[in-house]
Amino acid sequence: MCGIIGIVNQAPRHQAAPDLYVGLINMQHRGKQGAGIVTYDGRRYYAEKGPGELAQAFIIPSSYEARQKLAQLLASQGNEEQWTHILPPPSVSSMLGNSGIGHTRYGTAGISSHLNLQPIEGSFHGEPFFLAHNGNLVNAKRLRQTARLSDGFSDTVVITTILSQSQERNFEQALLGLIRDLEGAFNFMVLYRGFVYAIRDRFGFHPLTIGRREHADGIDNIVASETCALDVLRASRVREVKPGEIVRLEPNGHITTMHFTQDTNIKLDIFEFIYFLRPDSQWYGVEAGQARYQMGLQLALEHPLDVDTIIPIADSGNEAALGYWEGLALRGSRAIFRPWGLFRPHFVSRTFIEPVQSQREQYLRLKFNPRQSQLYNRHVAVVDDSIVRGNTIAATLRLLKEAGVASVSMVVSSPPYRYPDFYGIDTYRIQNELLAQSLNGNTQSVAKSIARRFGLRKLGYLSLVATLKSVSQLSDGWLKSKDFYTGPFTGQYPAGLGDFAT
Image 1 (tube, rainbow, N blue to C red):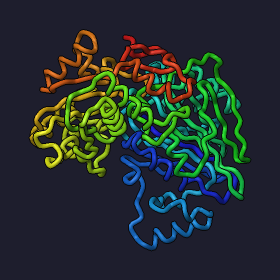
Image 2 (tube, rainbow, N blue to C red):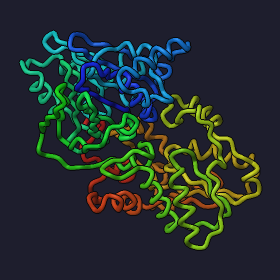
Image 3 (cartoon, rainbow, N blue to C red):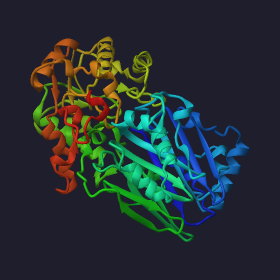
Image 4 (cartoon, rainbow, N blue to C red):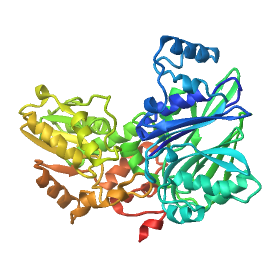
């Protein structure tokens, strides 16, 4: 679940790098293993990337003089009000050019090394280009053989290498030839000669939205994985990149499009709404936070618990917990809502995307601190977005028992996670660890088994019908249940399994 962003500013004096940096900051939740930015000024490329989150990948300005110099640069571009809290480091401010792309990495394929940090550089007939990717290919093994690459290289390196090896004379024809060989989920951007190409697979598994910013000097066009990145850049949302579409952002302010296939079949990854998207991001007009709130309301209908306190697993469970509490209140419940009953210090990042198991368990202890003053001797309902391995629930229950709760029940704003995901996150690597997969029977029997295992008073999963309804009803009827990818819940993979079928 990487985050990608591309910008082409019409005015040459409007540098793209600061915008790219701030846009990536707002998509940091989509990956923390590495980050990178590349810009182009009409003559040369400027590239910066490194491991870790943005603050680690780029040097943070420590001196007052450095920050003042950067503030003066931004003010000279008419952006003095835009950077009140986040200032890009000097290494970014020195990157020239009004076009560029950026990436924040969550590795689903390839080893975590500098070679896999994005954007990746390629060369088309001796001319450089850069590529950044979000997704997961299911035919990467065959493509690696074609590109003569070892297994340690990421999908993005494979894509870049094949494009570099193309014998087509025209770059766009080479791009079309490459895309038609790709199978699975992919959104990617290419920076070439000052143009930014944004491509979305034929199923549209993951979000990619076009934004537009108008000012006295012209038009800035932006494409990003999430609309929260557009919002912070004061860009209005234009539309989604369509499944099977290539969008080209041009230095003259124009946008041109082409399609690499007419065989499209929209399948939005429902986990984007359940977990990935930031709550204030919208996808096809549906705000993720509102969708999660609706999931909570539906949970209250399907699993009304007799408890006196409701707490979320922060942060992805926050909106669902609010909806659940309000839904119970409509049924006469007097339970109180304690949004910070499990306090989360926000210097700790998402633990789900921590790649090492031992580190994940340590971070879980850091991530939550139960507030005994709010929880002691209370009958508590915990609301979370999903249960994958069961590590979070096990650690949370230990903490709550240490805080002296009387009993713990749990409701989950999605169905049991039974099957590996091959199109967005790397649960295909840990499919033997998926908690619900090892349990037979219907959803109710799975819930009872897990409740017994962890000492829960009760456990309730949201039905798949209600999960999808929570999103579709917010789309004014535009989205139907058939328009979602639900592989982790159903084992149905519309783009096939490719290399993973054997």
